[in-house]
Image 1 (cartoon, rainbow, N blue to C red):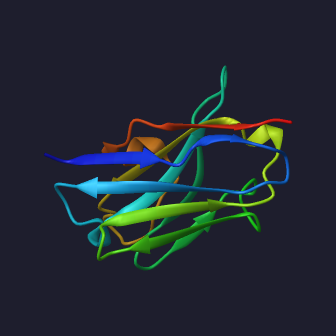
Image 2: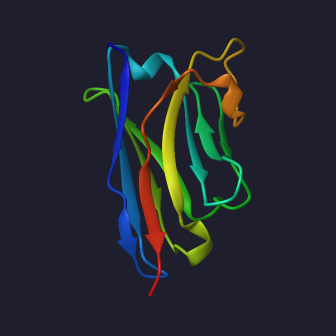
Length: 124
């Protein structure tokens, strides 16, 4: 059974950091492009960053603050978020797909495996 499970969300103060985890089962993450998305209340889902074997892309909102890493032995991927601000408050999702040309995408419609999401709240 293919599954992605996020964890690590929570409440953090402005300027703080969080690391989100995404555990995959039923398939090998290393073969797939990974995207991290977020959705704030009343807003559309936004692609934060994506990574494949041949590309990494950061949305403007994530550059310099967020980074992605993988642990292929554990079949996991992580999203490190630093310098968090209240506007980063959202439900965060990891997603995976096989990019046909090797380049990752931040279009949610390209992804076919999704986690259930984890809430991140940035507030004092």
